[in-house]
Image 1 (cartoon, rainbow, N blue to C red):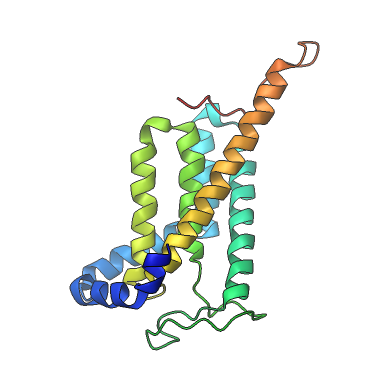
Image 2: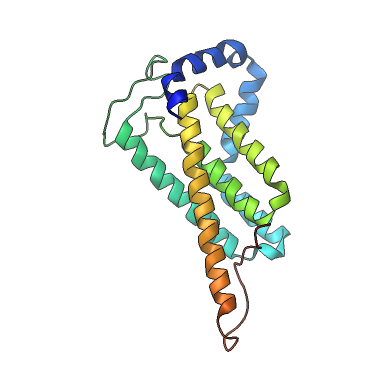
Length: 199
């Protein structure tokens, strides 16, 4: 991460020269960016719960918690560092320090955090699809650089925040499930909201 941060502007400008000018990639990037907004995450989660009865409705609560946690963490970090987005800083890497408003700041990327938090949750339920979920999340990160909304370090750190929060939520849910299973069977032994054991 420090290496990327120190070379952020160079990596960002090199990407812009080699790939950034390919217009069709902008269309793909815009599509990927829109996929991880709250509205479509909610719709996708509901459709998935209806299609796969194993998920139960607890899955929606997990998605809501993961999205709220990553959004709160990203908002706080943006306010602490105050790093301007590329277009607002003339492509310079400017950290302004603590600031109350965060909408003009790009460190870390909220889209990257959301994509990796979702990838962590989905991986817990569909472990054999883990590579596909991670590749999809990486493509969301690249989309944010393609659209000149973030520097590489923004998406890298956002991805880390999302993955840590997503996997923490999965671990917490699995711990609750194990405790519930180890309790006496006097109560309902149902495992609503249980995640499958990790391979």
